[in-house]
Amino acid sequence: AQSVTQPDIHITVSEGASLELRCNYSYGATPYLFWYVQSPGQGLQLLLKYFSGDTLVQGIKGFEAEFKRSQSSFNLRKPSVHWSDAAEYLCGVGATNAGNMLTFGGGTRLMVKP
Amino acid sequence: EPEVTQTPSHQVTQMGQEVILRCVPISNHLYFYWYRQILGQKVEFLVSFYNNEISEKSEIFDDQFSVERPDGSNFTLKIRSTKLEDSAMYFCASSGPGGAQAFFGQGTRLTVV
Image 1: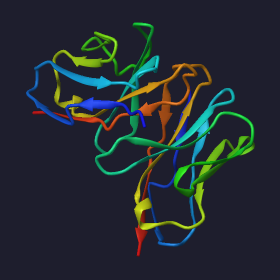
Image 2: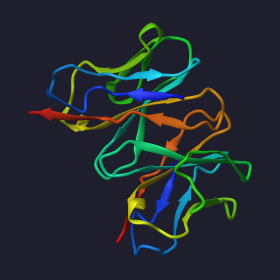
Image 3: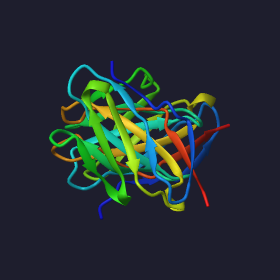
Image 4: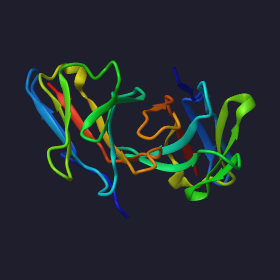
């Protein structure tokens, strides 16, 4: 069965500082990997995804993530955080077939200090 | 930009009542999903739907749940007899012909009292 672990429940960073959110997954084959952002009372907005190819993927809002197969990780990074980045970040893994279910991690709540 | 639309945004219902949560997926999408998030917990998969039938469902999706695509645009989740523990945010999602990337709606917060 597939599973996702986000080890950090809460992270606080200062505005302008760099950010890395950790995500580890368990999956028997090559997974599809996603990062979503969830603002309070909002739905899930896709930040970026990895299906195949280049292991460093770029997303919206200046985010990037790197797929490391050897570490079963897909960590999300941003070089300089803005106050508007404060939100819940969800890492997800899915199978490669169409219509598959996504399994999400528990999320990391990011707080940004002025 | 096309988006998944869910109505209502918040619904309060009494225990034992039936509720129907409604979703309008993105128009050319073929795969439809329901997820839920109990307050403070993970987003959990409930069911996926393709070609007018359920393609996958989780253990959560028991006999009190059902899904339907009553026409060419709507996708509904029915809970027949709500329990207190059904209180959660319910997210609808859809994905296109390629299938893998899901687009989520804003969610319906269901409160069972």
